[in-house]
View: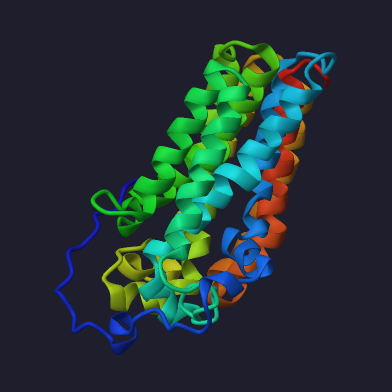
Length: 316
């Protein structure tokens, strides 16, 4: 069930939003570790995992495809997602000055417009690698890069909408990466069953993305961003996230059973039951336990993805 996003009055611009990026040191002295922090390696894992699930779900062997698999993993994680993180940090530098002032751009460790230059360069590298992996992967890479910029940058800035922003993230981080993995292995579009399952897991990932908004409630509120924890309140947003994740997996379980992938359906059912058991703790104090649930519940969620992929690929 969709929740309407209420309109909000313009609030006075906080002082943190009007401060320029502090010039801590010259661009020549920007350290590689600051650039790596900008690209947020911790965020690379979900799309890399989804890419692997796509490769497995194709049912194709790895013989003669190792180069494409390695390139696809690099593209899905460090390149496209790393680009999206750089883009997001550049266009969120004022909000981060409130929520995470120690980040590389608001702290001045990446000074001037170098955050924007890094995002542009990473986009070009990502598109080039996609081109080398073939036309289907190149097209998927361009779609991913387009959404990476549209998510954070005006005039679209999808992240400003609490329903649309997490949906875009889920579709690109999980669905597009899964699609790319299957396409790399097949050299063609994945079959319909694979497309349906990756779509359902993408919808479920909407809830995962909502969990990431709990850490930025105050900054989002001051900046006028209508994330679900801001518009619905943290408890209702947590319930919405849990319902979204669970509902998508229930559909996956039913489809796997209908398609005679009984063992996969059983495994996904087991990990879903474990997730549901952990959800009351999250709902009790979402701001406190969202990081914990990201470690426990989301891990179970992605294990279910792999089980579904193994079934679709004919491995179990």
